Image (tube, rainbow, N blue to C red; front, side, top):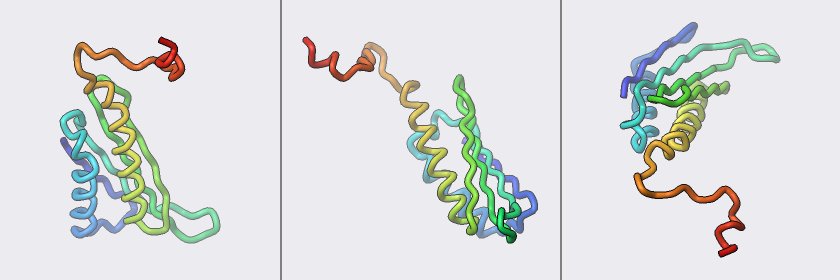
Length: 118
């Protein structure tokens, strides 16, 4: 799994880089075999009522699936990173569940009542 980090208009420290890489690797432990690349963009943006807020965008590239993209804006960059990475990992896990489906197993019917009709 390749992790790329881009910090635009943001003071990117080595501690923040280590924190971000650790968060990404931890969040994607169950799906790392299916993930080609995780790209993270950090930037500072203007808030609606003045001031500055921090934006974190996480893009996850999967083989034969659409790219997962999550945006999060928070006052604290660490909070934005946590929320965005967690949400991206959750969406990725849901998308890869169909990729991990074992051969020979049939999918459950969409109507739960259909299971009990027999």
